[in-house]
Image (spheres, one colour):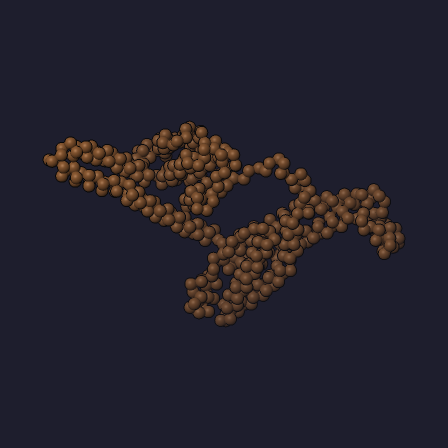
Length: 440
């Protein structure tokens, strides 16, 4: 997730949003959603109510069950239409609900009917078809007068001349007693007041319509979208795949590092020691030199193995906690890092490990790509969340583009209900905040 930055002053709209709203496409699309909602809701209400009533009335016979299933299937079709309308006119993405017994459809119509009847999603769609109709009537009766009266009264100075020419009236009649006496809007002050009132209604209409469509959004998202349980299951499945992919990638990295680094060095060391053993009697000086070189190779192999072990899980993280581990990590960074650690207790070991490796990758990015001269690392706890924030004065421009390290970090944090917030304008500075659940 990338934090939004305010627009530069020169690019900010000069006309306030309240004045631009009546002329914006978004307001007209919402108004069209209200207008089209009434006939669709009336048809959906009549159809689903008729099928549901017939199905319940005929439950004493075999016909009631398939009629109820047909009512639920019809409601699901109406729900698909409403989701498409919400995407097109309200600019929302409610998400598609879980399918109805997809694994049972191949077993015949009976299994499909029972799957429909057992599906809570289908019953939520039916409830939407029944509840949306009264709200659609109310929305239509409120939005249309606001919109029509507002524009009609605002444009009154342009069309009031029609009344004396074609209706034999001096202006728009506000009151009449049937005997020719009445109050007409025909004087300049009255025309101006009518126009001003119309402008007020025009300015209010988009916000009234937005409030009405806000209820539509709640109904669509709550009754026609995926259930919370299904959404949570999808998130957990996605997180599990990310964790599995990350673990597999880490294993491949460890195998590659062992094969190309320490293992190759130890093989060469064994060969050198074998040659030194052969030369020990005939050329002791050469053998001693080869043993000395082998000693140096042993030190390098131990350093590589130590770095590899630190990359798997550093001992200091287990023994002393996240703050000291990050201090040791920052000491190896090529850019000076100032650390502020406000933690008084330790989170769960898994959260500590994710925070440590997140900081490790971010500090590596600073060393390799940022061209920064200073950096800060802040660590603190807020309620039940662990926050890690790293700031550098580099050239900025960091984005979580697909395939980048930041995209991988985002997926890894998502797998544990975490967030990665990136604020990196071109020219810097860059501030990246990792938010993780505390989980004692």
